[in-house]
Image (tube, one colour):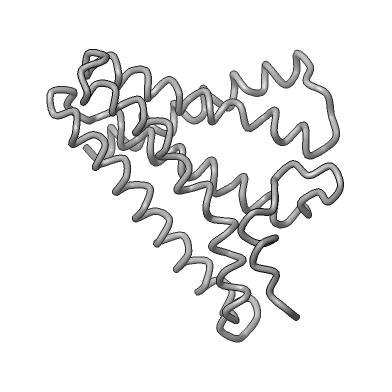
Length: 178
């Protein structure tokens, strides 16, 4: 099986002509949620006075989670398939894990506004936390789109409930680990 690097690295989540298969969509959505929850958990206890440290904590969290996730998937593949993943399978899994890295982009950009003095550092931190919560809740609309559904009130309610669940997970993680 040949490796189509362009399609692998740039294949859209929402292609009308060639939609992502369920397995890959599920892997990317899982990575997206996982990355966002851990970035949010890293953001919450940050001391706003050290605004540049927050950016480094968020980047470090996303990068270490990405590496850990890729390692775990490789081990899981070995158990599932009885052999180590091929280079093509490794690259494919890394592509499905990219949403973990993307979870750090928006919060870091917002934190940078505090670092540059455009916003108060505490305001930037709160906005970054809200942005991540909105990203988590917004995945309900992505899932609906993958199913070919138009947004409804049920999607909005689902987004609110998912956001509340994510906030609860973060609160539990922060209370138990900090």
